[in-house]
Image (cartoon, rainbow, N blue to C red; front, side, top):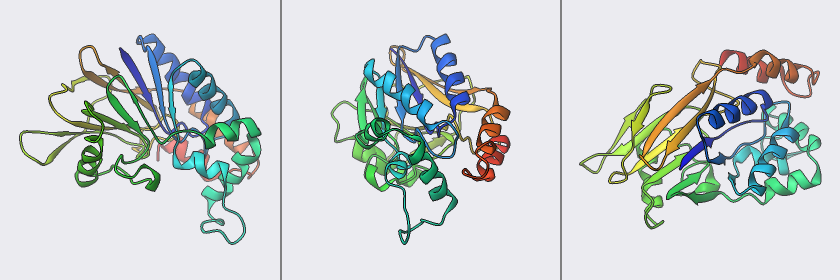
Length: 256
C-alpha cells in the first residue's frame, strides 16, 4: 500500500490541492491527515470539507492542537487570548459551520493504519502537544508506540519540518535529515519516527508544501516537496483585511 501522510495543512487550500494531486499521481492508495487542518490560513471550511470527504471514504484523519483551538478559541481572560494565534482561531471558528466544528471536535488523537501509528504530536502524551523535535522526545514517542503490538513506525506532524529518527544497534536514536524525492528504506526490523512536515506552513525557509509517501509493500519512505500557488494563498489571507494577521501571509512567502 502507498500511504500519503499529510499534516499541518493550516487552512491552505492551494497547498492541500497541490499535495493531494501530487500524491494521487504517485499512486497513493490511502490518505492520512495528521492534524492541524485549520489555523493561520484563509480557507478553513474548504480544508475541513476535504477532510470530511476523505474520512467518509475510509481514509484516516486525526486532530491537532489548532483544530482544538478553532473549536474552542480563547476569549476574554483566557490564557493566550490576546495572541495573534488566538485572533486567527476566533476568525477560523466563525468561518466553520456547526457540522464542521463538530467534525474537528470528534477527531481522534491517534490512529493505526497499515501497521503504523499516526499522531499529531508525540505518542507518549498526544493531548499535551509535545513537539518531536529531538532524539530524546523521539525515543519517548517510540516507547509509547511499543504499547501498540506490531507497530515499528510512528508518523507525526506538529513540527513543520521533515525529519527521520531510527533506533540503530544501540539504545540511542539516530537522526536523519532526508532529501526531497529520494526514497529511504525503513525496514520493520528497526523502529522509526518521522515528522512529515507541513503542507500549508513550511518552516525551513523553503515555501514549497511538504508531505511524505510510505510504501508498505517495500517499506520505503519518500519525503516530498510540492510547488503550489503561494502568492494566491498569501493574497487570500491579506484579503481578510486584518481579520487574519498579515504576518501569516508573510510567513508563507518566506517558508518560515
